[in-house]
Image (cartoon, rainbow, N blue to C red):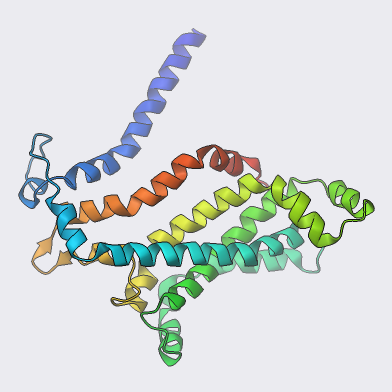
Length: 271
């Protein structure tokens, strides 16, 4: 009975995983179709694969958009970690006056809809001559991800007993030495999982990107949207671009899956 239940649950898990993965699989397959095959109804799995879509998006300059996405996402993630990790450490390890209010303020910024701030943000960046520059998106994506870093990393830091901090202080280590040499290595899985989430959020962001950039600093989501024209949607080319766009996240997720799972289950649900 126990084996049968285990088999059914395993089967159900694989079916559920396939259900969630099917749209991605279909997108990858569509990227190898001609436009006529991509919109054919009913859809067919029998077609002649072609690299024509990838050749066309390569000729359209996809490399520039890939570089922009990579540079903006990596820089903003790094800045968010530099700003957010020490803040999370302080909020987790030390009793601060109105610490809960500070935490709520961080999370309240995530609740603010982007459309509610886009006009003042646009005017400020226009005044500073930062429109269509990577700096504008780096600033916004960093601000967008700092609350996530603070909340996630605070949970990981709270798993570390305060006695450990007292121990390295007794041994003569300074606060910074203890932070970098003792505490940070212990929360490395949390840092990796938090970094990956920040990277994915920055990589996928569309609204600020399409509003504040045109060509020089445009990212992959904006490039993909360029195939939505008045003549219609170019499904095969959009699928090819989307396949290229998800590859970095898939590769990173694959190589860091152990650290990611460990990090997400380490203390993310702790208050």
